[in-house]
Image 1 (cartoon, rainbow, N blue to C red):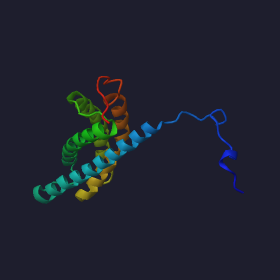
Image 2: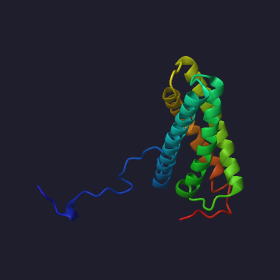
Image 3: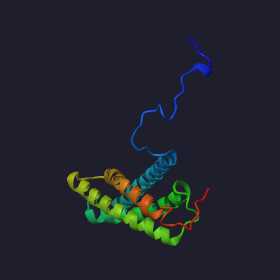
Image 4: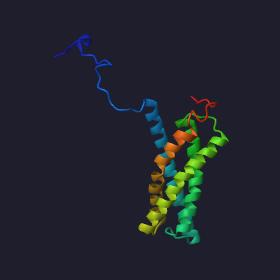
Length: 173
């Protein structure tokens, strides 16, 4: 049977069941954008680790399970990707443009905390799963980078890009 629109039951705010706290649309979109930037950063980081390890393996005799080599390469890759992620998050995710050097320092400080988690995880994985090829270590690095993502998002949302922390900054649109 077909009913005219005027006869369909209408849900009113009073008739809807109460649910727990929900994220608003803007917060969900911000999480998706942060995740997209993080995924791009993780991919770039993994490719850089693979590139640096491959060059070192083929030309300098580096071994992909040497913890000193792995930590050095991961640190260089992190530093490069952290800057890229900061700029993308400032512009696209949190709409804080143009970037400010103090905010960038805060971002690097929070990302450094995530990086410590990443390096500990990476070295643990390399210790448990001895790698023989640069691509294997690069994949383990990708897993380790992803482990710090939640911590990084929370710190960026609550401290670096918080509208309460930077009240004079106008969000870009």
